[in-house]
Amino acid sequence: MVNVRRERYREETKTEAKRIALEQLAEQGIAGISVNAIAKRMGVTGPALYRYFAGRDDLLNDLIRDAWHDLADTVEATVTASEGASPPDRVRAFAEGFRSWAVTQPHRYLLLFGTPLPGYHAPQDTVLAAHRTMSALLVVLPREGFATAGQSTLDAQLAGWAGARGEGDVPPAVLLTAVRAFTRLHGVLSLEVSGQFGPMGIDPALLYRAEVESLILGDSGVRGSTRLSGPG
Figure 1: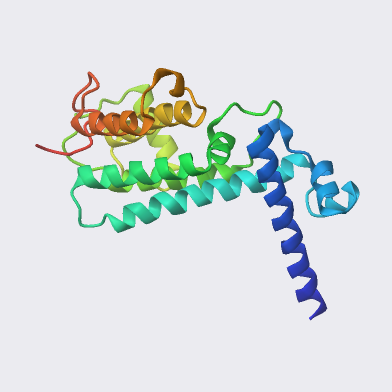
Figure 2 (figure 1 turned 45 degrees about the horizontal axis):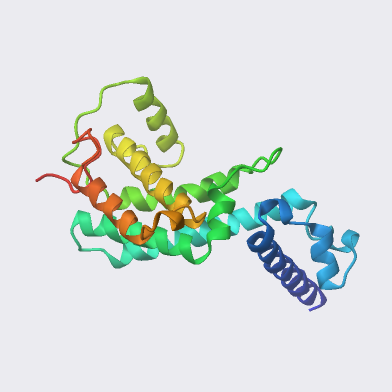
């Protein structure tokens, strides 16, 4: 019973520390996260909190890991809810889930996709957690209707990347489409969450949806390798 209480206290302490760290992140960005400042807020000493986190990087690992899994949970839920819908509607569902997560907690989005912290290296398990979101995108992409990809260096790199993550059966052309689609959606979202569209007087939600429709229709200048709606 003592061990159970100790473990519960440990988890409660870590949860509170991460909550405060997220507040610091929202207010000051990633550079503003301070284990000592968190300890002060919690009424404990810095060394006491280091019993739960080996250092700031260890705390960042937890925040990044949590954020990747939370994002993946969101997009996976929208993809699951879209089962039975047409491929274009499933792509729209993924895109809306992706955006809703980003705009409701932009500080966590920028933690994942913003400027890397100098000297910080994410552990391998956070990289694998990140792949869950890409896997959700691959689920909604049709396997037919793409231009046949050659055996280029990029094809080999994509195949190696996918194979290492259990996606070895996905054709290279589909992998390329997924990566390009993700890149384009991220491009709009990163500008939106950092407030870049405000001075332009443009509604970023409308711009994002226009980009989604462009992806679905293949209006990128390389029709066939980027078309997300399948044959037709």
